[in-house]
Image (cartoon, rainbow, N blue to C red):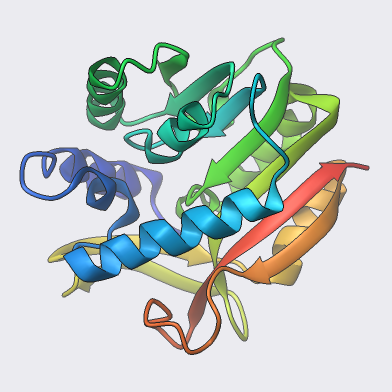
Length: 232
């Protein structure tokens, strides 16, 4: 099981790259400029093709990183975007960017997603690249809270890495691509669907983010996947 302390150390080190790499690269780990733009364009198009209009909606962005998705919701006139991020350095970058962009509806909260508590209800919960960095105990704690955060007719979108043939774990292994040690747990698509069903959600849609021939499908063991859920 991956070590939460080492995972947090990894993300703290990513915040230090803010002045070295593009803003989007800090959180999404794609540092090649050409691939980065492809990733931004293709993912943004797919995510918003799955969602209804977010105009005047209240959105909870869990594991928000530097706010890259929060800003996309704000650009589309979301009423309020609450960005929850446990790495203080990433949240500070996001706050700075939000002010620079005059996106005053975006608010950052420094808190682990699985520890976040609120009586506020949201029209959309967006979870991006978060579960892959949670061990099973942390994932269980987060799932126990999600239903309470969502309005009755709201949606929950999960964007996360998945194992293709089976669950795939990287435990503090050195990554040449990132030039540092990396840990992640890639659960299968079926495992995610079952976890969310047990937490009170029904899966509306589930599909790999990119077609098989896409240049960003770099590793045979894993695929980035998109899921859309509603309350059961």
